[in-house]
Figure 1 (cartoon, rainbow, N blue to C red):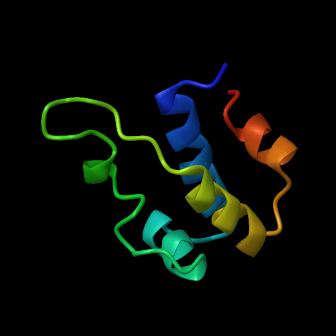
Figure 2: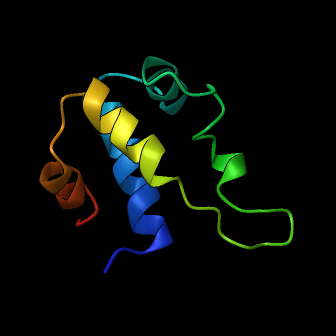
Length: 76
């Protein structure tokens, strides 16, 4: 099972592995550059905000990353 922290850690690692910031990764995928900002990972009331499957699919496509490889990034 993936946790909120696991998914965000994998996005951070994917950006880093591609020598990008999370904002650079978002821009490369055609997303708003602030999509993956740490400040947007929790709502003002403390509820976790998860990235959409569409956003994940877009970053996997532009980085030519298979989902299985992305899933491995969630495991430390």
